[in-house]
Length: 428
Image (cartoon, rainbow, N blue to C red; front, side, top):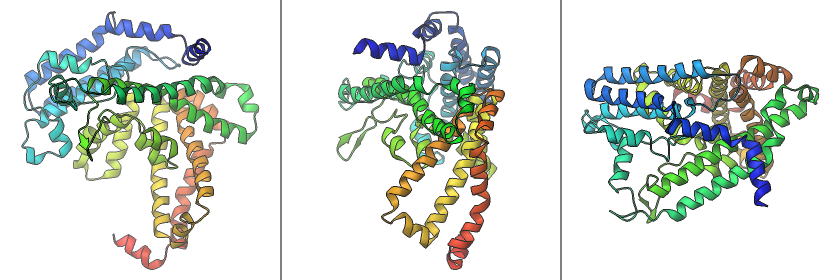
């Protein structure tokens, strides 16, 4: 039983040799210098530039340009397992470090609760910066955490037994087991839903409904690759104590490094719910250091667009990343309008709370996962000629569906929302 399963894992994930070579080259090989250079320069920036806006801008510019240069010189038409994969995680850590050091020089009353928790009151040592950067629980795939959390871990403050090793084996093994289960699901089903199938004549010859259902199932399965990595990495962080998050209702919490809300991921019928359950720490990092820092723009939509653009180029330079995050913004916009319509319309509210809700839930889940997989096509095969071919084969149904929904929403609101409530809503 075990041997066939391991064979399936090897086949679905590819040969383990590239991953092994990656880890060895990063840790002891020639590619180590990329991270070493960025860590040392970031440390020097903290020391020499101090708590200044110049240090923030310099850190952001240098770290992002180094990463983008790495993408430019190493990228191919396939998914690349190179030094840039863990380096993108490191890039966010080092940029966040500059922000946290800058916040440490402000008056506490001017900081948010998040900023107070992560602010650095003194310049960290080189050993602390290196330990934070190369911490094995988050170096390859995340999660993101602050240097202040790492300092508390080293000081043994992150434990359910003050001054002692945390009793974290059981919660850590629970996350490992869940992550391993997700990995098994991916290993079993992913060979039946390969990315390469999109570009075959066989896929184009299938009926339209089959092509759409394939996108739906493929989108669901492909995400288990990321879910399994993040949940297992979370288990590592819990085991060390980094995942400790205090006491709530008399129970010790171990979710400080949670990168996935697996139950929400599996059950939510909303696009916003899936995004809220997925890659949580990276999204929180972007919200804290990009979206909220752009408050001076005075426009949430503009800040949101800028944040998604940052995330798209942080993933890579391929056009598919920009298209994916653009679709995400548009889908979320339409979904929020639809939720507001249901809330404001007595007819739709009554229908949503009726005995027909289970049927509505099934239909909603179908639409949810069909159009969740749709932008992921561009994200995973990312090359312009490839994703254009796939979208052409399904007649750009996702683009047309949400464009039509966006255009028709004002008319639905006019027809289904009472005028009085509509005026009140407008005034608000």
